[in-house]
Length: 102
View 1 (cartoon, rainbow, N blue to C red):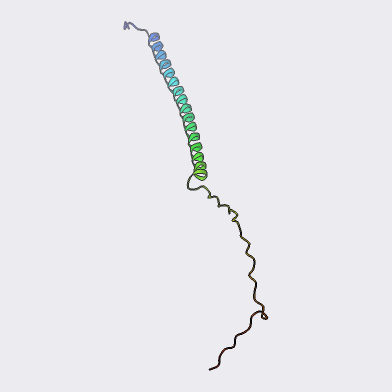
View 2: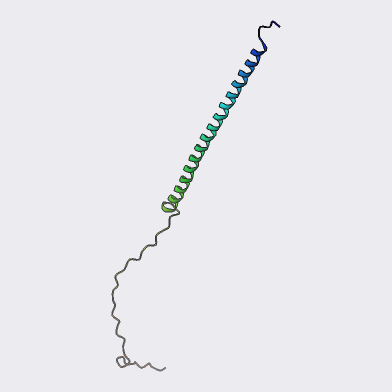
């Protein structure tokens, strides 16, 4: 049993190795959580901007573009000339002309 290492030294090295791997897994998992949170924030902001752009496009289309309502032209008053009625001949004024008989 003169291998140079006692059983205690080997157990201590195994514990250090397990602690190192545990710490590495913990850091990796924490990094994933941070990345997911960041990705969610970026996606939320991008989605919000997309919704605002779509709403802005709709407003612009229906107020400025071909979807805009056309205003009815307002009628302008035209000057009217009053015409006095022509006097109608009365039967006493007109003498009937006799028609010749054949």
